[in-house]
Image (cartoon, rainbow, N blue to C red):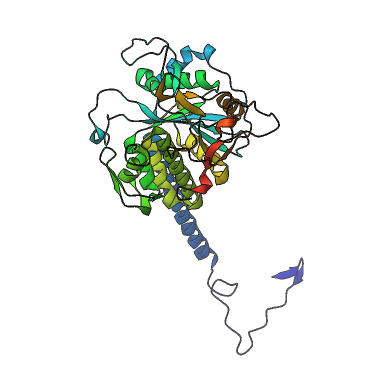
Length: 411
């Protein structure tokens, strides 16, 4: 060896007594390079296999969840025929989603609630507005008995209905989702971007997926029609009991649809609060059952019929503070010609629709109980009848009777 070109290198000195012998694989021991490279190759191969398996499992889960979703193409085809008469979106980045609770008896798990007569009603309909900046979410309940103008709609047998004034939930019975969307758009002037329909079975599975939702009852409940029997006090409802709680009408409170809508809003608020505060969205082992239940539970339009679309929606909701997830019922009062039906309170209802249409703030506050024990039925600004006919003040955020998800059902 040489230490420079042309200059012989001095030999290495022998190891002193007590010095360790050269390790295997050093210049004077057995070579380590081949063995180390061999070990690294096997390690790399093992890691690659694990990554591929994980990716394969992840892809399988993705495909399974994606395949759970039912796409409603019929509504889209029908709505396309009326595109010219539909309202335009005022704020493109905001989203308006119509949530429809179907009482259909068709399908697995639904026949136990009655005979399938081939029809269905929308006993629960909520217009969910997600603000463009993802700073708030406002869910507006539309009463089933609200008197509205239902446009001419195509029925399941191909025939058409005539335009008529009727109670709101007839729209779903007449012409399904498309008819309901057109009725809502005609009523509010708000463009419906997406829709979701959920049946009894789907609702129960959603509640079970989050291990139930807590409620508080002042008195025991025994409702045969809703299949609900509960003691008084604080308790967690799952599946069948949760469905009975939001469906019950005759045995809780004064038996009005007004109070049932308030109870549904409280329950949904508690459900949102639990999902956001319980770490469900950040824990894959807890998130998968929720996603599996959610994707099996809904029928939706083509714009929300993939797991990616639903994930983006869930991510948007996750960004909204629970105190900014608000629930209210459209301002209404007993119908002039039939006290068992509802009509809008004006100009309060128009002001609410305008705020949502233009993606402007809406505030909610708990209202005072009226004589029948339900939240202020007039539902005007500030929830007070005296304010219902007062002209809105542009510089002030309008306030309506309602609640937010942070309050929970037991507050």
